Image (cartoon, rainbow, N blue to C red; front, side, top):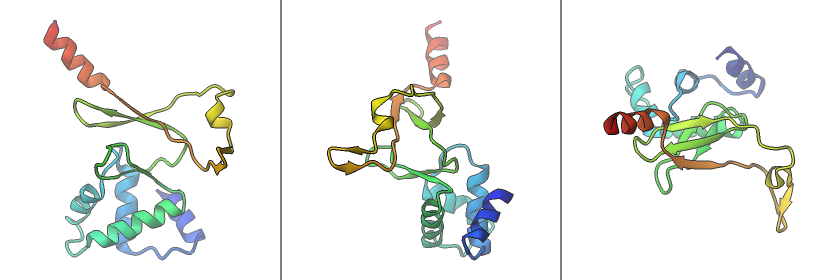
Length: 145
Protein backbone atom coordinates (compact mmCIF):
# COMPACT_ATOMS: atom_id res chain seq x y z
CA UNK A 1 0.00 0.00 0.00
CA UNK A 2 2.85 2.39 0.84
CA UNK A 3 4.36 1.82 -2.61
CA UNK A 4 1.12 2.73 -4.37
CA UNK A 5 0.71 5.87 -2.28
CA UNK A 6 4.29 6.91 -3.07
CA UNK A 7 3.75 6.37 -6.81
CA UNK A 8 0.48 8.33 -6.72
CA UNK A 9 2.23 11.23 -4.94
CA UNK A 10 5.06 11.10 -7.50
CA UNK A 11 2.43 11.51 -10.22
CA UNK A 12 0.95 14.54 -8.49
CA UNK A 13 -2.28 12.82 -7.47
CA UNK A 14 -4.21 14.48 -4.66
CA UNK A 15 -4.81 11.76 -2.10
CA UNK A 16 -8.37 12.43 -0.95
CA UNK A 17 -9.88 10.14 1.70
CA UNK A 18 -12.14 8.64 -0.99
CA UNK A 19 -9.23 7.87 -3.33
CA UNK A 20 -7.32 6.39 -0.42
CA UNK A 21 -10.33 4.23 0.49
CA UNK A 22 -10.65 2.86 -3.08
CA UNK A 23 -6.90 2.25 -3.30
CA UNK A 24 -6.81 0.56 0.10
CA UNK A 25 -9.82 -1.63 -0.67
CA UNK A 26 -8.27 -2.78 -3.96
CA UNK A 27 -4.88 -3.44 -2.38
CA UNK A 28 -6.55 -5.85 0.07
CA UNK A 29 -8.89 -7.41 -2.49
CA UNK A 30 -8.11 -10.71 -4.18
CA UNK A 31 -11.47 -11.31 -5.82
CA UNK A 32 -11.50 -8.83 -8.75
CA UNK A 33 -14.38 -6.63 -7.54
CA UNK A 34 -16.81 -4.66 -9.70
CA UNK A 35 -17.48 -0.94 -9.25
CA UNK A 36 -20.68 -1.76 -7.35
CA UNK A 37 -18.84 -4.11 -4.98
CA UNK A 38 -16.14 -1.52 -4.33
CA UNK A 39 -18.74 1.22 -3.78
CA UNK A 40 -20.85 -0.93 -1.45
CA UNK A 41 -17.85 -1.81 0.72
CA UNK A 42 -16.44 1.71 0.92
CA UNK A 43 -19.81 3.31 1.50
CA UNK A 44 -19.86 1.75 4.97
CA UNK A 45 -17.04 4.15 5.99
CA UNK A 46 -17.98 6.97 3.61
CA UNK A 47 -21.80 7.00 3.35
CA UNK A 48 -21.87 10.02 1.05
CA UNK A 49 -19.36 8.60 -1.44
CA UNK A 50 -20.81 8.42 -4.95
CA UNK A 51 -20.39 5.72 -7.57
CA UNK A 52 -18.98 8.46 -9.85
CA UNK A 53 -16.10 8.97 -7.39
CA UNK A 54 -15.33 5.25 -7.48
CA UNK A 55 -15.40 5.30 -11.31
CA UNK A 56 -13.13 8.34 -11.53
CA UNK A 57 -10.66 6.88 -9.02
CA UNK A 58 -10.55 3.56 -10.88
CA UNK A 59 -10.03 5.38 -14.17
CA UNK A 60 -7.13 7.33 -12.66
CA UNK A 61 -5.53 4.20 -11.16
CA UNK A 62 -5.89 2.40 -14.50
CA UNK A 63 -4.34 5.30 -16.44
CA UNK A 64 -1.40 5.32 -14.01
CA UNK A 65 -0.89 1.57 -14.51
CA UNK A 66 -1.73 0.66 -10.92
CA UNK A 67 -4.66 -1.65 -11.72
CA UNK A 68 -6.15 -3.64 -14.61
CA UNK A 69 -9.72 -3.42 -15.82
CA UNK A 70 -11.07 -6.81 -16.87
CA UNK A 71 -13.98 -7.53 -19.16
CA UNK A 72 -13.83 -11.28 -18.67
CA UNK A 73 -17.53 -11.60 -17.86
CA UNK A 74 -18.65 -11.20 -21.50
CA UNK A 75 -21.12 -8.34 -21.65
CA UNK A 76 -21.13 -8.26 -17.85
CA UNK A 77 -19.82 -5.66 -15.50
CA UNK A 78 -16.13 -4.86 -15.63
CA UNK A 79 -14.05 -5.88 -12.66
CA UNK A 80 -10.72 -4.62 -11.40
CA UNK A 81 -7.47 -6.32 -10.54
CA UNK A 82 -4.97 -4.61 -8.23
CA UNK A 83 -2.15 -6.60 -9.85
CA UNK A 84 -1.12 -4.68 -12.98
CA UNK A 85 1.62 -7.17 -13.90
CA UNK A 86 1.34 -9.53 -16.85
CA UNK A 87 -0.86 -12.47 -15.93
CA UNK A 88 -4.06 -14.02 -17.20
CA UNK A 89 -7.44 -14.84 -15.68
CA UNK A 90 -9.84 -17.76 -15.51
CA UNK A 91 -13.57 -17.29 -14.95
CA UNK A 92 -15.16 -20.31 -13.30
CA UNK A 93 -18.36 -21.08 -15.18
CA UNK A 94 -19.78 -22.79 -12.07
CA UNK A 95 -19.27 -20.26 -9.24
CA UNK A 96 -18.32 -17.13 -11.20
CA UNK A 97 -15.06 -16.60 -9.34
CA UNK A 98 -12.17 -15.04 -11.25
CA UNK A 99 -8.74 -16.53 -10.61
CA UNK A 100 -5.32 -15.13 -11.46
CA UNK A 101 -3.43 -17.47 -13.76
CA UNK A 102 0.32 -17.10 -13.85
CA UNK A 103 1.94 -19.12 -16.51
CA UNK A 104 5.24 -18.87 -18.23
CA UNK A 105 4.49 -18.49 -21.88
CA UNK A 106 7.19 -19.79 -24.19
CA UNK A 107 9.62 -17.10 -25.27
CA UNK A 108 8.82 -17.98 -28.88
CA UNK A 109 5.05 -17.47 -28.42
CA UNK A 110 4.22 -15.60 -31.64
CA UNK A 111 1.50 -13.35 -30.26
CA UNK A 112 3.54 -12.25 -27.22
CA UNK A 113 6.44 -11.22 -29.42
CA UNK A 114 4.37 -9.13 -31.83
CA UNK A 115 4.55 -5.36 -31.69
CA UNK A 116 2.01 -5.08 -34.48
CA UNK A 117 -0.51 -7.38 -36.12
CA UNK A 118 -2.24 -6.59 -39.42
CA UNK A 119 -1.06 -2.98 -39.19
CA UNK A 120 -2.34 -2.53 -35.63
CA UNK A 121 0.00 -1.58 -32.80
CA UNK A 122 -0.22 -4.20 -30.02
CA UNK A 123 -0.12 -2.51 -26.61
CA UNK A 124 -1.23 -5.33 -24.36
CA UNK A 125 -1.97 -9.05 -24.53
CA UNK A 126 -4.53 -10.47 -22.10
CA UNK A 127 -5.86 -14.00 -22.21
CA UNK A 128 -9.20 -14.85 -20.63
CA UNK A 129 -9.73 -18.50 -19.83
CA UNK A 130 -13.10 -20.06 -19.06
CA UNK A 131 -13.50 -23.30 -17.17
CA UNK A 132 -13.99 -24.72 -13.69
CA UNK A 133 -11.99 -23.70 -10.63
CA UNK A 134 -10.35 -26.24 -8.29
CA UNK A 135 -12.99 -25.73 -5.57
CA UNK A 136 -15.87 -26.47 -7.96
CA UNK A 137 -14.01 -29.45 -9.42
CA UNK A 138 -13.61 -30.83 -5.90
CA UNK A 139 -17.33 -30.31 -5.18
CA UNK A 140 -18.20 -32.16 -8.43
CA UNK A 141 -15.81 -34.96 -7.52
CA UNK A 142 -17.25 -35.21 -3.99
CA UNK A 143 -20.80 -35.46 -5.38
CA UNK A 144 -19.80 -38.30 -7.70
CA UNK A 145 -17.80 -40.09 -5.05
